[in-house]
Image 1: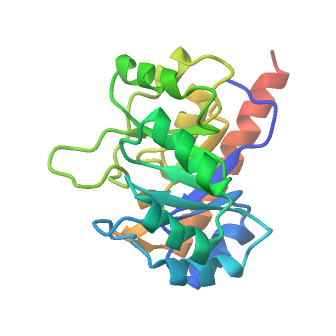
Image 2 (image 1 turned 180 degrees about the horizontal axis):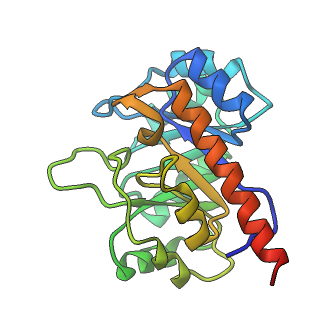
Length: 228
């Protein structure tokens, strides 16, 4: 598949100055901070705000939450001033509307995918969520809705209507990224565990390799498009 605009690249679960600086210097369009205590990538809102201030205005700042209540969101929005709220839990369409109304921010709603029927769950959110994120369903026993390092059948993305704007997530790394982009033509990609040396520990070399793979894949899809 080919694309008509540059690929959005989101590096998620950032916790250090070095990782933030590396991601942005290499061309990340989005950086994500995770506010979920069970995650090894969990960060305090004050710390996330300090990191975000280093690169504010150069990249979209995303706050990732899981079924957060308004008290939690109040603190996150106050300390981080995010550009986007990513809701990675079981939030209903009504909850998404409420969050948008209260905070005046665009919402990216995450969905876990294993089979075709999982994609039908987005239908009530179309026109409500500003963007979708498709992640793999967690493996048995995992308490994390994302960041598990597993992928899903990317060919399912062909079932989406052309107008659905989304980011592809779930086990993306430097080795499988080209295949994921080739199969899906995804307008955006998201990685967290795929650029880590251990859970929650970003590896600057892996971040660099991920961007190299993304640029190569983007070039190859552009060349393929011109050849048609």
